[in-house]
Image 1 (cartoon, one colour):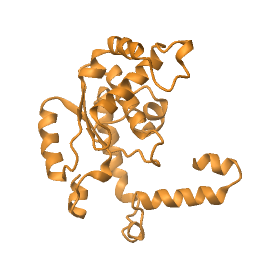
Image 2: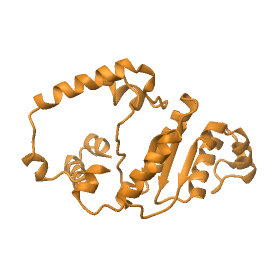
Image 3: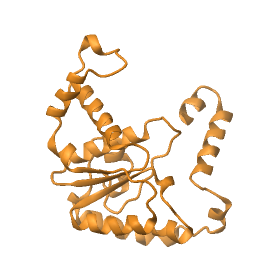
Image 4: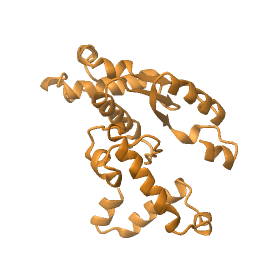
Length: 219
């Protein structure tokens, strides 16, 4: 949206959109007051690159060039273990659909990987619907005559289910409980990690119960 407004000759609207986004993610004057010299971070970055180089196969490839090649180019690309990423946009812009597409890509590139999806907004059926609709498009199951229907043909959905790779449906677990607090999430994460889960998704993080700055930092 920002790039489109800037290119169309509306820089003021683009600036307002950036300001709205800044407020949303909590960029405040406090950030400036707590500024730290860049030199403090140099050694930490070098050590991180060394760890990545020593474990070349630990990254998660998802099939999106932005994530695989661009976003972590200084670390050799791919989503790296231990990273915490936030996808932010206005409501209804496709954040959940994008996350599910990223998950699908990761599962298709790494056998045996498990992903746990905390969905505070979508129901399990919602997640299934998005997954099946994406599979219908991927496998070309809707057919020319049905492309403009307001819903997907149930037969196409059943066909998509039969074609869906088992790792996409069995290695992704969905938890639709709402109102979990930080302690509950951390405790469950520790247990799920011991069961083989390596990627966690919170959709969306604003609905996690956080009582103060200390809990925010722990999360």
